[in-house]
Length: 189
Image: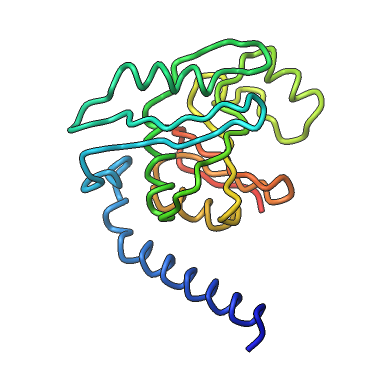
């Protein structure tokens, strides 16, 4: 087999294992945020921002409790970089992001494209970009747009959808996935 053939076979095997794991674990995800049962005693977020050059590696939940200092650090990291506005990020969104990362069994940190957005930033994006919601959950700290180099949009979206705990948007042309803690729904391609 050629290098491409063996790479394709490895990818197919990896996707097959991932799909089997998601199907086998599906009953765990039946309740909103029930997917976190058995997730361990620690929840961690690893991200970096291409816009600011900042990195984040924060354990934000230990032994059933959120760590307030870590949450403050995350709120600052996920701020609206255009305006500098900081807003409390909903812990349900953080849990979805962390669980999705863990399910994909990846060590690479997420690239954060967008976390909190002020109304002014959201309106400016709406005037220049298609697909930006008027009442975006980004404005309430309940959404994030994320990318991984080592996983496809489809792989990331399937992992987020397996959580069955919010909205998942596929933005294949722009190579990112939107994750939020709003109503369960999905869109994009």
